[in-house]
Image 1 (spheres, rainbow, N blue to C red):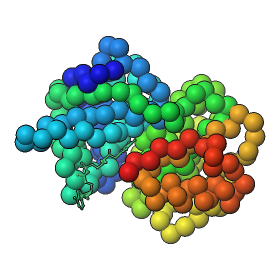
Image 2 (cartoon, protein in one colour; image 1 turned 90 degrees about the vertical axis):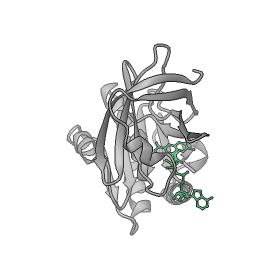
Image 3 (cartoon, rainbow, N blue to C red; image 1 turned 90 degrees about the horizontal axis):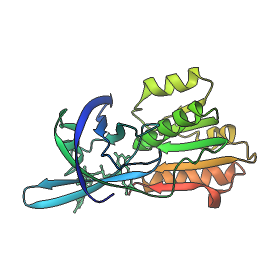
Image 4 (cartoon, protein in one colour; image 1 turned 60 degrees about the vertical axis):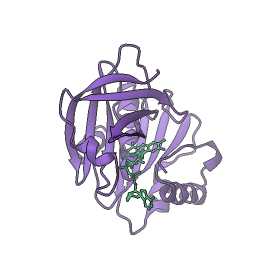
Length: 213
Ligand SMILES: Cc1cc2nc3c(=O)[nH]c(=O)nc-3n(C[C@H](O)[C@H](O)[C@H](O)COP(=O)(O)OP(=O)(O)OC[C@H]3O[C@@H](n4cnc5c(N)ncnc54)[C@H](O)[C@@H]3O)c2cc1C
């Protein structure tokens, strides 16, 4: 979809310096959890495009992205300050690292990578498939949705920055046929997660990765 103006439905705090931004889906918009969109903002005379990954299990009517606000950033603080009804220009979806009705989805998430993690795990559960989430963050977001997944029997492990990633990944993966591993987050997390996956006997080359920068 080319850049299209849509509107904010809601902005919800989902952690310290983190919001879930829900936008009205433009009529022709279709996407899967794990794909990302481009949001375009005018700041003064400059255009500032930024990418955000879909964190809702579906995009019918509305869709959600989860945004970690960098107080020093140009765009994320503006997203956190949006209000219902405000206009936003959106393009996409983009990316190949998305849920495709896999029998078991194992999602390794760092920081705002928890957005696609909860979106995929919720969609997988709705579809009757299995999911597991390993999430590393010193200030976790979406704790309510992670609790909801746990209650539905999903393996959920939330880690601080002090370690334990290799053990948690080892517990989460089964290497059974039909299992798909996803990794979402910034570059340093992707490095740690692929190392942990390798140490756990997984196949980093077959994982679907999305690098936030
Ligand atoms: C495929 C993809 C998916 C993504 N999905 C998500 C997502 O789901 N959620 C999410 O929160 N983010 C996501 N991101 C990251 C997001 O697009 C933004 O990069 C992020 O929100 C920061 O934008 P910003 O404008 O607030 O910060 P920026 O203005 O880009 O600044 C980021 C940091 O860099 C510093 N900085 C900027 N310019 C300089 C400079 N010249 N010298 C030194 N330091 C500088 C700033 O002080 C700030 O601390 C994704 C990125 C990609 C590529």
